[in-house]
Image 1 (spheres, one colour):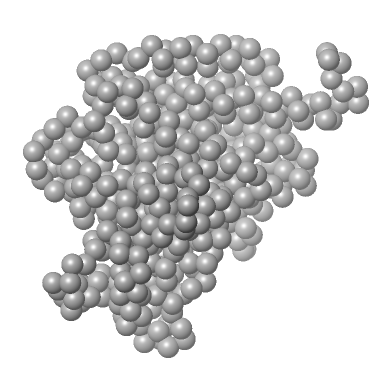
Image 2 (cartoon, helix red, strand yellow):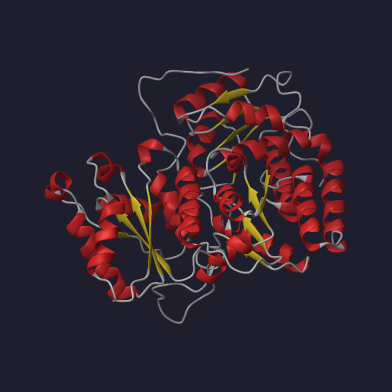
Length: 451
Protein backbone atom coordinates (compact mmCIF):
# COMPACT_ATOMS: atom_id res chain seq x y z
CA UNK A 1 0.00 0.00 0.00
CA UNK A 2 1.50 3.28 -1.03
CA UNK A 3 0.67 6.45 0.81
CA UNK A 4 1.23 9.79 -0.85
CA UNK A 5 0.67 12.88 1.17
CA UNK A 6 0.90 16.55 0.26
CA UNK A 7 1.88 18.32 3.49
CA UNK A 8 1.53 22.08 3.74
CA UNK A 9 5.00 22.36 5.27
CA UNK A 10 8.00 20.17 6.00
CA UNK A 11 8.53 19.30 9.68
CA UNK A 12 11.98 17.84 10.40
CA UNK A 13 12.76 16.35 7.01
CA UNK A 14 13.94 12.75 6.86
CA UNK A 15 17.11 13.72 5.01
CA UNK A 16 20.21 15.84 5.36
CA UNK A 17 21.71 18.33 2.97
CA UNK A 18 23.42 17.34 -0.23
CA UNK A 19 26.79 19.05 0.52
CA UNK A 20 27.11 16.92 3.67
CA UNK A 21 27.20 13.81 1.52
CA UNK A 22 29.89 15.36 -0.66
CA UNK A 23 32.00 16.26 2.40
CA UNK A 24 31.74 12.65 3.62
CA UNK A 25 32.86 11.28 0.25
CA UNK A 26 35.85 13.66 0.08
CA UNK A 27 36.87 12.55 3.61
CA UNK A 28 37.53 9.18 2.00
CA UNK A 29 40.35 10.49 -0.20
CA UNK A 30 43.93 10.55 1.05
CA UNK A 31 45.19 14.09 1.62
CA UNK A 32 41.88 15.72 0.68
CA UNK A 33 40.03 18.65 2.21
CA UNK A 34 36.66 20.13 1.28
CA UNK A 35 35.49 23.71 0.84
CA UNK A 36 31.85 24.73 0.59
CA UNK A 37 31.08 27.56 -1.81
CA UNK A 38 28.50 29.41 0.28
CA UNK A 39 27.93 30.72 3.76
CA UNK A 40 29.81 29.79 6.93
CA UNK A 41 26.62 28.44 8.44
CA UNK A 42 26.52 25.58 5.96
CA UNK A 43 30.03 24.46 6.94
CA UNK A 44 29.21 24.80 10.65
CA UNK A 45 26.05 22.72 10.28
CA UNK A 46 27.92 19.93 8.52
CA UNK A 47 30.81 19.97 11.01
CA UNK A 48 28.34 19.75 13.88
CA UNK A 49 26.45 16.82 12.38
CA UNK A 50 29.50 14.80 11.39
CA UNK A 51 31.48 15.41 14.59
CA UNK A 52 28.44 14.41 16.63
CA UNK A 53 28.24 11.09 14.78
CA UNK A 54 31.89 10.20 14.21
CA UNK A 55 33.35 11.78 17.37
CA UNK A 56 36.39 12.92 15.38
CA UNK A 57 37.67 16.44 14.58
CA UNK A 58 36.54 17.59 11.16
CA UNK A 59 37.60 20.59 9.11
CA UNK A 60 35.25 21.95 6.45
CA UNK A 61 36.29 25.23 4.81
CA UNK A 62 33.92 27.86 3.48
CA UNK A 63 34.13 30.62 0.90
CA UNK A 64 32.20 32.65 3.51
CA UNK A 65 29.50 34.45 1.63
CA UNK A 66 28.51 37.86 2.98
CA UNK A 67 25.62 40.08 1.90
CA UNK A 68 27.79 41.51 -0.89
CA UNK A 69 28.84 38.15 -2.32
CA UNK A 70 25.27 36.89 -2.14
CA UNK A 71 24.41 39.69 -4.59
CA UNK A 72 27.52 40.11 -6.72
CA UNK A 73 28.89 36.55 -6.64
CA UNK A 74 31.57 34.71 -4.68
CA UNK A 75 34.37 34.40 -7.23
CA UNK A 76 36.86 36.41 -5.18
CA UNK A 77 36.08 34.73 -1.85
CA UNK A 78 36.31 31.24 -3.33
CA UNK A 79 39.71 31.99 -4.87
CA UNK A 80 40.88 33.51 -1.60
CA UNK A 81 39.60 30.50 0.30
CA UNK A 82 41.46 28.13 -2.02
CA UNK A 83 44.67 30.12 -1.50
CA UNK A 84 44.28 29.85 2.27
CA UNK A 85 43.51 26.13 2.15
CA UNK A 86 46.54 25.37 0.00
CA UNK A 87 48.82 27.48 2.20
CA UNK A 88 47.66 25.97 5.49
CA UNK A 89 46.82 22.35 4.59
CA UNK A 90 48.94 21.63 1.50
CA UNK A 91 46.32 19.09 0.37
CA UNK A 92 46.62 16.67 -2.53
CA UNK A 93 43.01 17.35 -3.49
CA UNK A 94 40.38 19.97 -2.74
CA UNK A 95 36.72 19.12 -3.19
CA UNK A 96 34.62 22.21 -3.95
CA UNK A 97 30.95 21.62 -3.13
CA UNK A 98 28.36 24.25 -3.94
CA UNK A 99 25.52 25.17 -1.57
CA UNK A 100 21.94 26.39 -2.00
CA UNK A 101 23.04 30.02 -1.89
CA UNK A 102 25.75 29.89 -4.54
CA UNK A 103 23.55 27.71 -6.78
CA UNK A 104 20.57 30.02 -6.40
CA UNK A 105 22.45 33.15 -7.41
CA UNK A 106 23.92 31.27 -10.35
CA UNK A 107 27.58 31.38 -9.34
CA UNK A 108 29.48 29.25 -11.85
CA UNK A 109 31.92 27.40 -9.60
CA UNK A 110 33.28 25.44 -12.57
CA UNK A 111 34.20 28.64 -14.37
CA UNK A 112 35.75 30.09 -11.21
CA UNK A 113 37.97 27.02 -10.81
CA UNK A 114 38.95 27.27 -14.47
CA UNK A 115 40.00 30.91 -13.99
CA UNK A 116 41.77 30.06 -10.73
CA UNK A 117 43.89 27.36 -12.34
CA UNK A 118 44.66 29.65 -15.28
CA UNK A 119 45.75 32.53 -13.03
CA UNK A 120 47.95 30.28 -10.91
CA UNK A 121 49.40 28.12 -13.67
CA UNK A 122 52.79 26.69 -12.76
CA UNK A 123 52.23 26.91 -9.00
CA UNK A 124 51.76 23.17 -8.47
CA UNK A 125 48.11 23.27 -7.48
CA UNK A 126 46.36 20.32 -5.89
CA UNK A 127 43.66 18.48 -7.79
CA UNK A 128 40.48 20.59 -7.76
CA UNK A 129 37.13 18.86 -8.12
CA UNK A 130 33.83 20.67 -8.23
CA UNK A 131 30.54 19.01 -7.38
CA UNK A 132 27.10 20.62 -7.67
CA UNK A 133 25.22 20.01 -4.43
CA UNK A 134 22.32 22.38 -3.98
CA UNK A 135 20.55 20.93 -0.94
CA UNK A 136 17.09 21.68 -2.28
CA UNK A 137 17.77 19.39 -5.24
CA UNK A 138 18.69 16.28 -3.31
CA UNK A 139 19.58 14.42 -0.16
CA UNK A 140 22.92 13.74 1.54
CA UNK A 141 23.00 10.44 -0.35
CA UNK A 142 22.67 12.30 -3.66
CA UNK A 143 25.60 14.56 -2.73
CA UNK A 144 27.67 11.52 -1.79
CA UNK A 145 27.00 9.71 -5.09
CA UNK A 146 27.69 12.89 -7.10
CA UNK A 147 31.03 13.50 -5.37
CA UNK A 148 32.13 9.91 -5.99
CA UNK A 149 31.20 10.17 -9.67
CA UNK A 150 32.82 13.59 -10.20
CA UNK A 151 36.04 12.40 -8.54
CA UNK A 152 36.29 9.26 -10.65
CA UNK A 153 35.49 11.21 -13.81
CA UNK A 154 38.23 13.71 -12.99
CA UNK A 155 40.96 11.25 -12.03
CA UNK A 156 40.47 7.94 -13.87
CA UNK A 157 43.04 7.60 -16.68
CA UNK A 158 43.57 4.83 -19.19
CA UNK A 159 46.69 2.76 -18.53
CA UNK A 160 47.62 -0.90 -18.35
CA UNK A 161 44.67 -3.20 -17.78
CA UNK A 162 44.92 -5.32 -14.63
CA UNK A 163 42.89 -7.71 -12.52
CA UNK A 164 42.00 -5.31 -9.70
CA UNK A 165 38.48 -4.70 -8.39
CA UNK A 166 36.88 -1.32 -7.77
CA UNK A 167 34.53 -1.41 -4.78
CA UNK A 168 32.26 1.62 -4.43
CA UNK A 169 30.43 0.87 -1.17
CA UNK A 170 28.12 3.86 -0.78
CA UNK A 171 27.37 5.46 2.58
CA UNK A 172 28.45 2.82 5.10
CA UNK A 173 29.96 3.13 8.55
CA UNK A 174 33.77 3.05 8.99
CA UNK A 175 33.32 -0.34 10.68
CA UNK A 176 31.49 -1.66 7.61
CA UNK A 177 34.26 -0.32 5.35
CA UNK A 178 36.89 -2.13 7.43
CA UNK A 179 34.83 -5.32 7.19
CA UNK A 180 34.68 -5.06 3.39
CA UNK A 181 38.40 -4.35 3.11
CA UNK A 182 39.27 -7.32 5.31
CA UNK A 183 37.04 -9.57 3.21
CA UNK A 184 38.65 -8.45 -0.07
CA UNK A 185 42.07 -9.10 1.47
CA UNK A 186 41.10 -12.59 2.67
CA UNK A 187 40.02 -13.34 -0.91
CA UNK A 188 43.50 -12.22 -1.99
CA UNK A 189 42.15 -9.49 -4.24
CA UNK A 190 43.89 -6.37 -5.46
CA UNK A 191 41.21 -3.76 -4.88
CA UNK A 192 40.39 -0.06 -4.62
CA UNK A 193 37.75 0.92 -2.08
CA UNK A 194 36.34 4.38 -2.71
CA UNK A 195 35.59 6.34 -0.67
CA UNK A 196 37.49 4.94 2.29
CA UNK A 197 36.98 7.02 5.45
CA UNK A 198 37.48 4.02 7.74
CA UNK A 199 40.57 5.69 9.24
CA UNK A 200 40.02 9.41 8.62
CA UNK A 201 36.72 9.32 10.54
CA UNK A 202 37.49 6.58 13.08
CA UNK A 203 41.17 6.80 13.93
CA UNK A 204 43.27 5.88 16.93
CA UNK A 205 44.70 8.49 19.27
CA UNK A 206 47.09 11.05 17.76
CA UNK A 207 50.08 12.64 19.47
CA UNK A 208 48.97 16.04 18.13
CA UNK A 209 46.26 17.47 15.93
CA UNK A 210 46.43 16.23 12.35
CA UNK A 211 45.27 18.79 9.80
CA UNK A 212 44.85 15.96 7.30
CA UNK A 213 44.25 12.68 9.12
CA UNK A 214 46.05 9.61 7.72
CA UNK A 215 44.00 7.24 5.61
CA UNK A 216 41.72 7.46 2.61
CA UNK A 217 41.88 6.20 -0.96
CA UNK A 218 45.17 7.28 -2.63
CA UNK A 219 44.93 9.43 -5.76
CA UNK A 220 47.01 6.88 -7.68
CA UNK A 221 44.46 4.18 -6.94
CA UNK A 222 41.66 6.45 -8.17
CA UNK A 223 43.56 7.05 -11.41
CA UNK A 224 43.89 3.31 -11.85
CA UNK A 225 40.15 2.64 -11.46
CA UNK A 226 39.94 2.98 -15.26
CA UNK A 227 42.09 -0.12 -15.67
CA UNK A 228 40.34 -2.49 -13.25
CA UNK A 229 38.68 -5.73 -14.29
CA UNK A 230 35.37 -5.00 -12.59
CA UNK A 231 33.56 -2.40 -10.50
CA UNK A 232 31.25 -3.52 -7.70
CA UNK A 233 28.76 -0.78 -6.77
CA UNK A 234 26.72 -1.32 -3.62
CA UNK A 235 23.33 0.22 -2.99
CA UNK A 236 20.12 0.30 -4.93
CA UNK A 237 20.71 3.91 -5.93
CA UNK A 238 23.72 2.65 -7.87
CA UNK A 239 21.28 1.24 -10.38
CA UNK A 240 19.69 4.64 -10.91
CA UNK A 241 21.13 7.64 -12.71
CA UNK A 242 24.74 8.26 -13.63
CA UNK A 243 27.22 6.66 -11.26
CA UNK A 244 31.00 6.29 -11.13
CA UNK A 245 30.70 2.63 -12.10
CA UNK A 246 28.58 3.45 -15.15
CA UNK A 247 31.11 6.09 -16.19
CA UNK A 248 34.02 3.61 -15.99
CA UNK A 249 32.02 1.06 -17.94
CA UNK A 250 31.12 3.53 -20.67
CA UNK A 251 34.50 5.27 -21.02
CA UNK A 252 36.95 2.46 -20.23
CA UNK A 253 35.00 -0.78 -20.62
CA UNK A 254 35.31 -1.75 -16.95
CA UNK A 255 32.71 -4.43 -16.23
CA UNK A 256 30.15 -3.32 -13.64
CA UNK A 257 28.17 -5.25 -11.02
CA UNK A 258 25.39 -3.38 -9.22
CA UNK A 259 24.43 -5.07 -5.95
CA UNK A 260 22.21 -4.23 -2.97
CA UNK A 261 23.87 -3.20 0.28
CA UNK A 262 24.93 -6.63 1.63
CA UNK A 263 22.72 -6.84 4.72
CA UNK A 264 21.50 -10.37 5.47
CA UNK A 265 22.28 -13.77 3.97
CA UNK A 266 20.85 -13.31 0.46
CA UNK A 267 22.44 -9.93 -0.21
CA UNK A 268 25.79 -10.99 1.25
CA UNK A 269 25.74 -14.14 -0.86
CA UNK A 270 25.52 -11.93 -3.97
CA UNK A 271 28.52 -9.89 -2.84
CA UNK A 272 30.55 -13.01 -2.06
CA UNK A 273 29.71 -14.49 -5.48
CA UNK A 274 31.17 -11.37 -7.15
CA UNK A 275 34.33 -11.67 -5.08
CA UNK A 276 34.56 -15.37 -5.99
CA UNK A 277 34.40 -14.50 -9.69
CA UNK A 278 36.93 -11.70 -9.35
CA UNK A 279 39.37 -13.78 -7.30
CA UNK A 280 38.85 -17.01 -9.24
CA UNK A 281 38.45 -18.95 -6.03
CA UNK A 282 35.65 -20.20 -3.80
CA UNK A 283 34.52 -18.37 -0.72
CA UNK A 284 37.02 -18.87 2.15
CA UNK A 285 36.00 -21.19 4.97
CA UNK A 286 36.05 -18.23 7.40
CA UNK A 287 32.99 -16.75 5.70
CA UNK A 288 31.18 -20.07 5.35
CA UNK A 289 31.42 -20.36 9.14
CA UNK A 290 30.17 -16.78 9.62
CA UNK A 291 27.27 -17.55 7.28
CA UNK A 292 26.45 -20.69 9.23
CA UNK A 293 26.43 -18.82 12.54
CA UNK A 294 24.17 -16.13 11.09
CA UNK A 295 21.61 -18.68 9.84
CA UNK A 296 21.76 -20.51 13.16
CA UNK A 297 21.02 -17.26 14.98
CA UNK A 298 18.00 -16.76 12.69
CA UNK A 299 16.69 -20.13 13.89
CA UNK A 300 17.39 -19.29 17.54
CA UNK A 301 15.73 -15.88 17.38
CA UNK A 302 12.87 -16.67 15.01
CA UNK A 303 10.25 -16.94 17.76
CA UNK A 304 11.01 -13.38 18.85
CA UNK A 305 10.93 -11.69 15.44
CA UNK A 306 8.45 -13.64 13.30
CA UNK A 307 5.53 -11.47 12.24
CA UNK A 308 6.77 -8.43 14.17
CA UNK A 309 6.01 -5.13 12.44
CA UNK A 310 8.80 -2.58 12.06
CA UNK A 311 9.17 1.00 10.82
CA UNK A 312 12.33 1.69 8.82
CA UNK A 313 13.47 5.17 7.84
CA UNK A 314 16.56 6.90 6.48
CA UNK A 315 18.41 7.19 3.21
CA UNK A 316 16.99 5.11 0.39
CA UNK A 317 19.73 2.49 0.08
CA UNK A 318 19.58 1.70 3.79
CA UNK A 319 15.76 1.52 3.84
CA UNK A 320 15.53 -0.87 0.88
CA UNK A 321 18.30 -3.16 2.09
CA UNK A 322 17.07 -3.09 5.68
CA UNK A 323 13.50 -3.90 4.58
CA UNK A 324 14.79 -6.87 2.56
CA UNK A 325 16.75 -8.04 5.60
CA UNK A 326 13.67 -7.76 7.86
CA UNK A 327 11.67 -9.75 5.31
CA UNK A 328 14.40 -12.39 5.29
CA UNK A 329 14.24 -12.87 9.07
CA UNK A 330 10.43 -13.01 9.16
CA UNK A 331 9.64 -9.46 10.26
CA UNK A 332 7.30 -7.11 8.39
CA UNK A 333 8.72 -3.72 7.30
CA UNK A 334 5.29 -2.13 7.65
CA UNK A 335 6.48 1.47 7.30
CA UNK A 336 9.34 2.29 4.90
CA UNK A 337 10.18 5.98 4.75
CA UNK A 338 12.86 8.08 3.09
CA UNK A 339 13.41 11.75 2.45
CA UNK A 340 14.47 11.00 -1.12
CA UNK A 341 11.97 12.48 -3.57
CA UNK A 342 13.02 10.45 -6.60
CA UNK A 343 9.83 8.39 -6.78
CA UNK A 344 11.67 5.06 -6.99
CA UNK A 345 11.44 3.74 -3.42
CA UNK A 346 8.29 1.67 -3.91
CA UNK A 347 9.63 -0.02 -7.05
CA UNK A 348 12.90 -0.85 -5.30
CA UNK A 349 10.97 -2.31 -2.35
CA UNK A 350 8.79 -4.37 -4.69
CA UNK A 351 11.93 -5.85 -6.24
CA UNK A 352 13.42 -6.60 -2.81
CA UNK A 353 10.27 -8.06 -1.18
CA UNK A 354 8.46 -10.64 -3.36
CA UNK A 355 5.12 -10.50 -1.47
CA UNK A 356 5.17 -6.73 -1.12
CA UNK A 357 1.41 -6.26 -1.67
CA UNK A 358 0.42 -9.00 0.76
CA UNK A 359 2.40 -7.31 3.52
CA UNK A 360 0.50 -4.02 3.06
CA UNK A 361 3.65 -1.92 3.37
CA UNK A 362 3.24 1.83 3.71
CA UNK A 363 5.83 3.65 1.62
CA UNK A 364 6.63 7.28 2.34
CA UNK A 365 8.83 9.14 -0.14
CA UNK A 366 10.02 12.72 0.29
CA UNK A 367 8.94 12.20 3.89
CA UNK A 368 9.41 14.27 7.01
CA UNK A 369 9.09 13.00 10.57
CA UNK A 370 5.58 14.42 10.89
CA UNK A 371 4.41 12.03 8.16
CA UNK A 372 6.41 9.17 9.61
CA UNK A 373 4.82 9.71 13.03
CA UNK A 374 1.34 9.64 11.51
CA UNK A 375 2.09 6.33 9.75
CA UNK A 376 3.67 4.81 12.85
CA UNK A 377 0.66 5.81 14.97
CA UNK A 378 -1.70 4.19 12.49
CA UNK A 379 0.18 0.92 12.09
CA UNK A 380 1.70 0.55 15.59
CA UNK A 381 4.94 -1.28 14.77
CA UNK A 382 6.80 -3.00 17.60
CA UNK A 383 10.14 -1.47 16.72
CA UNK A 384 11.70 1.41 14.79
CA UNK A 385 14.99 1.12 12.88
CA UNK A 386 16.87 4.20 11.71
CA UNK A 387 18.91 7.18 12.81
CA UNK A 388 18.72 9.21 16.02
CA UNK A 389 16.32 11.57 14.26
CA UNK A 390 13.58 9.05 15.05
CA UNK A 391 14.15 9.39 18.79
CA UNK A 392 11.31 11.86 19.41
CA UNK A 393 8.75 9.54 17.82
CA UNK A 394 10.22 6.59 19.68
CA UNK A 395 9.93 8.39 23.01
CA UNK A 396 6.50 9.88 22.33
CA UNK A 397 4.92 6.60 21.20
CA UNK A 398 6.98 4.33 23.49
CA UNK A 399 8.37 2.27 20.62
CA UNK A 400 11.97 1.01 20.94
CA UNK A 401 14.47 2.40 18.44
CA UNK A 402 17.42 0.47 17.00
CA UNK A 403 19.89 3.11 15.93
CA UNK A 404 21.70 2.66 12.65
CA UNK A 405 22.59 4.66 9.56
CA UNK A 406 23.43 8.36 9.81
CA UNK A 407 23.31 10.33 12.04
CA UNK A 408 23.54 8.65 15.45
CA UNK A 409 23.95 11.63 17.76
CA UNK A 410 22.77 10.27 21.09
CA UNK A 411 24.86 7.12 21.43
CA UNK A 412 28.58 6.39 21.43
CA UNK A 413 30.12 4.36 18.62
CA UNK A 414 28.12 5.60 15.62
CA UNK A 415 31.22 5.01 13.48
CA UNK A 416 31.45 1.40 14.66
CA UNK A 417 27.88 0.26 14.05
CA UNK A 418 28.08 -2.77 11.78
CA UNK A 419 25.40 -3.61 9.22
CA UNK A 420 26.96 -5.49 6.33
CA UNK A 421 28.22 -8.93 5.33
CA UNK A 422 27.59 -11.98 7.48
CA UNK A 423 29.37 -10.58 10.54
CA UNK A 424 27.70 -7.17 10.44
CA UNK A 425 24.29 -8.73 9.76
CA UNK A 426 24.82 -10.96 12.78
CA UNK A 427 25.42 -7.96 15.01
CA UNK A 428 22.41 -6.17 13.54
CA UNK A 429 20.16 -9.20 14.07
CA UNK A 430 21.28 -9.53 17.68
CA UNK A 431 20.61 -5.81 18.33
CA UNK A 432 17.08 -6.10 16.95
CA UNK A 433 16.24 -9.27 18.90
CA UNK A 434 17.70 -7.91 22.12
CA UNK A 435 15.85 -4.60 21.74
CA UNK A 436 12.57 -6.51 21.38
CA UNK A 437 13.38 -8.67 24.43
CA UNK A 438 14.40 -5.63 26.47
CA UNK A 439 11.16 -3.85 25.56
CA UNK A 440 9.08 -6.91 26.47
CA UNK A 441 10.82 -7.19 29.84
CA UNK A 442 10.46 -3.53 30.71
CA UNK A 443 6.76 -3.45 29.81
CA UNK A 444 5.83 -6.71 31.54
CA UNK A 445 4.15 -6.55 34.94
CA UNK A 446 5.70 -9.89 35.87
CA UNK A 447 9.17 -9.11 34.53
CA UNK A 448 11.36 -11.91 33.23
CA UNK A 449 10.91 -15.01 35.38
CA UNK A 450 13.58 -17.26 33.85
CA UNK A 451 16.46 -15.84 35.90
